[in-house]
Length: 342
Image 1: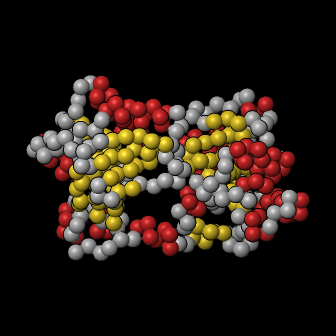
Image 2: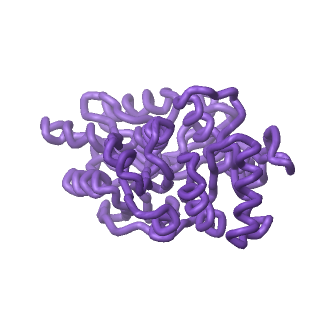
Image 3: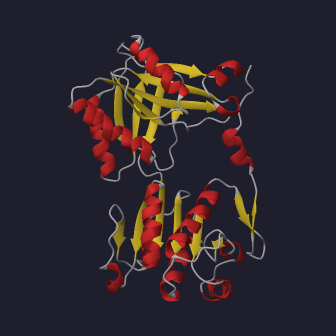
């Protein structure tokens, strides 16, 4: 669930407190190049006010028109598809002939949405289930990595921090990295056993861990939705984190430092920590995409750019860990592929 959809939750709570009725719209399936991903939310207030989005604007306009025409006045949720034909896709402004399938809830349960907002504020991962035949909705704990489910009858949408970032070191770069990562909907943990750094840490929304880096990595139970970035410049701390992270399923493991320092780091990891060449080869170091970054905010930006490219499988390094080459992998292509329009 991204930050835009969290804004929807916050806004509909205010609408309900003010006595307004609203409809909740969820993107449940896309084909082709759709503007918003499956799971995206939009709320539509009874007077036509909108929060969130499901497209570039044309579908929103159509839904507002249907609302004012009284077509969204029922009680039970239903599905609606836009862009079935190329002419319709062009009419609604869907790029590249895209198609969207939506689930529209004319009367969502306000108390359940308030409960969902509270769960997310506590950092929990929650799945919301909706049965179209009855309009019954419920909340339950979600499984990490769970994706949206839609079979035409039951809609299950996971909400909460699907991606996690562990930063080793509570310095200046870490502050910018944590703030930017939270804007990209990462749940951020900072690990620094040094009290002089840890006590000065002030980034709301992040979690501070004071254990040793290897213990913290293990405690987080790394999975393919975790990134680990070491930025202390202290091998006694960074190497401990890398030792555990490089053996784990974490999708991204990076360390700050020059090419020379990273070459020495790789030698240490293989010689003293008994990591294989394949495991050490997973290390992104020097960390970050080569964008000429110099300042702490620019370095943080380069790290998140590389993390994003790695997450979507569209960037790799050369064999000598030199300049980047960009590749659209089969997985990335499949994410935007779909059946041709009529």
